[in-house]
Length: 98
Figure (cartoon, rainbow, N blue to C red):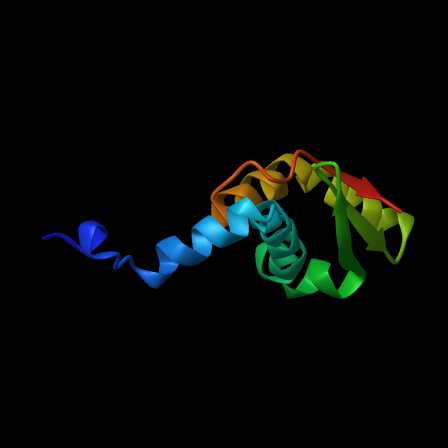
């Protein structure tokens, strides 16, 4: 008998199923983008900015000044790509400054 027929599944598979069935898997991916912000952009940019939340695929970023906003604006495609690579899904479609 294999594990499936015995009713034994890896805990990861069970958790993935429960999270997906409750619609929480997407929310976890979105929160991962916020948590990963500092790691992805590095300490210098992270000191001048803060990832707040994701709304409909847009990562909302608070910046300390317009010059930092401009600098991050130039890096947006690369930041989005790195975030999505780390998350494993295309969770972040855009970055918006507030």
